[in-house]
Length: 208
Image (cartoon, rainbow, N blue to C red; front, side, top):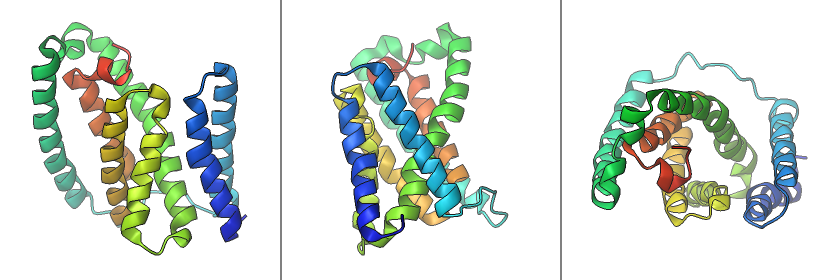
């Protein structure tokens, strides 16, 4: 399972073929089954093949992490607030003000049940398994953003693809620097929750 050819086929199936198939019309239960099988496979490989130990690294640079996140968040806040204001002003912070319970529920469920599994697959697994396939680190990071966007192809929404590509770049760079699934998951949850908060939920297919 650690051969280069095996990893190449694995990459193609998990990160290209499977996501593209989810954008094709066929029974949802089959898609859910394939997605579940894919995640179980990823977890198995991480635990049994790669022998990864999931524990918090005591040497993590929390202060520098938070500084970087808040700088990037400030830019995201300004850009997305302006975007919503000029494209659909009525949606600006609508969910937060009109349905705070839905907002709280979404932030919790999204952060725990969506963000962390995504980061396990697209950062932890991807970086652990496929770094040996690429000599160019910039290409490796860029491709991570591409496959992350491809993983959201089933939304059939151009805005989602653009945002997930940009987010994928940010998350890949963070993971490359920190080697921490926890930190990149926190960053991912903050940015994603903000998009829902600012009023971009309906644009991105979130429940509103």
